[in-house]
Image (cartoon, rainbow, N blue to C red):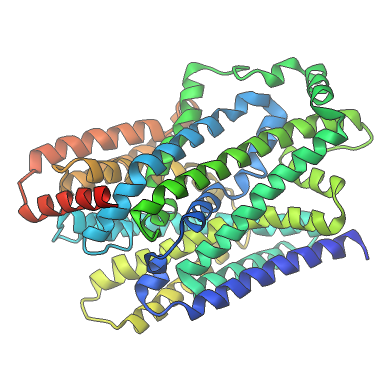
Length: 492
């Protein structure tokens, strides 16, 4: 058999496994809470790895190793910022969000939680946040489909449309039928695949390049500044890179995992597993880039056309084609896990936060689950149509979507959990000004100087705080729920 056939067998096994998980989850899904939040039944390992896989996408296996391959350790400041941000997210926000969403009318989405937390009778907060999620994630999903299509195009020489249909078809199938459980279980498997591949490639590679000493000697011979954390950096540049960590507090597809864990007491185990996964993955990514530098320097007859493909190329060189196929599947897993997570959050925004609010009639769970599945299909079709041609405007939007979500939701969620005087008007105006600041900052070109999440996050915090002070009126129900969430936290 040719190498490509072995690789296709591996990809086929992976795709079949994802579809089987979708079918298994479909059988366990009976109501809207099951479909949107897995019935709050996730264990710590699934919670941790699904949050990680939903977070990292193809950036972990392609973007970051490619950046370090070209620029050296100076490109790793983003990884440092993300690690710190993820830890603080797990430590500070996760337990409180789990307990408060349960107390606040058992909220199953972030917009629903914000409405219930502030007793917002205007419905404006829920509708605006639902629209923000719907718009940003439709384009976000589309960009993921573009990435998957390009992956198949480059790895198997398929037509762009063929790759798009394969990625969209399989991802939509298991998300549509299995809902949140399918997304979480597939993310767990995908997370395992990603970390195993990121450890296998550099470990085998170090032996191929003559051991750690010779590997780093080769890198120093190429350019000793590649090992310099501060090469070509500025103070503002480091702040911008580290500020990526701020985004974690406001990513709906990540923080929803904290709401789905079975209990607050499981959070510590989940945090340890999640942070362990993240640290091993990032270390593997960095060493993959360094091994690639040494290997291609020692083997000048081989050329690496695209630095972002260093992980893929090394996986095909070091392993049997069948194993190399699973390395390719790990890249696909990174892309699909994020797309699926974004699809289910977008679906929940459509049904739980827009349909149920705007269509004022009681609907049975069976009808709502059906509508949830139809909304997954509808968003997927729109995203796929946007992805029919590689459109730079979509990819440009994704470049600041992380900042957009982080600056829109991050400060609002933090203040809502830690400050009892936060109001619905503070949250609404803070969210809007955070999002607008990010968009304006990026579009006028200031993002090249300072990452737009920094001004967006700070302005949101200030506006939320000031407007809340101006509009605060004591509400006994809000006060009681705030105290109950803290009691539940301590009890667990």
